[in-house]
Length: 120
Length: 113
Image (cartoon, rainbow over all chains, first blue to last red):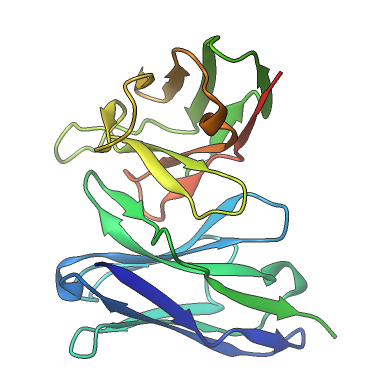
């Protein structure tokens, strides 16, 4: 069964950095684009970043460009998101999601995401 | 980035009645390389992760009830529910996958009247 497990969240001060990881199982990681999506408390879904299956193309929402860095390790089946120069508005639950048919994304139904709180 | 705009932002519907949600993109979602449109619809039920209902404008995910249908072209899309059921309550999001980075609409909250 497919599973995506995020880790690495926590409390960080504005301007600080954090590193998120997503370990996957149940599917062939190297064949799928991967993405990060976030949701601030009581707010909607916001696309954050995506990376191609080989890791040779990366994309970022304007709101995080030049501050966040997405990467992947296809030998270890892990997706990463490095967050830097964090702002209060980056506080959210971050979901690791798999690329899906028709240029879509798939959320793990059991996924809890990882909470990032940016506060002084 | 492509801006996705949904309307209405909230909707209260009597059980068994139809519902419709609109989604418009700031630019055409026709992918130049293959002419296809990569527009998805998601439902996030309270306390749950989002679940994709529709992809490529009108293709339903397996196990999605037939009362859900998607339509549209270019930059104008809609999700229709032919007769709302209690389990349809939640927030609906459109998401474009044509242009990287992908982008979501603001969400439409569906409630039962």
